[in-house]
Image 1 (cartoon, one colour):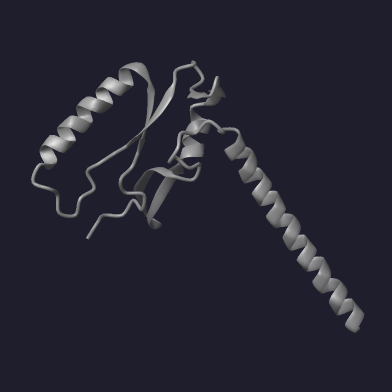
Image 2: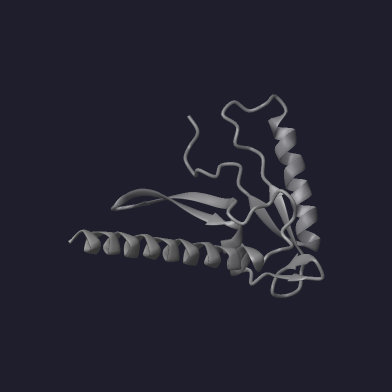
Length: 138
């Protein structure tokens, strides 16, 4: 009886290791697909988080860098991240999630809008949200 218990325990432990390995390797494949991500950008960085309200209640839907790159059918070409049409992809960290905005917030937002408009003329731009939780700040 005691031997059966140890066998069962060993089997469960090995199964747990295999599940962990499978999860790690599938995540590794997704990350290794985008080895040319720029410094400071991680595969699991949240690029968009939005609240979705339904009859079942409210939930937050989040999208990561890897999910967005997959949508764009992005690839690393000559060390640069490019969308399916070959246009280079750039990341932009959005500002504007202030609980108490700075005195010059309108100028900051205006400059951001101008900079984004210029970037979008040459690149596919992935805007990284300043509110990865998707919840309203208090």
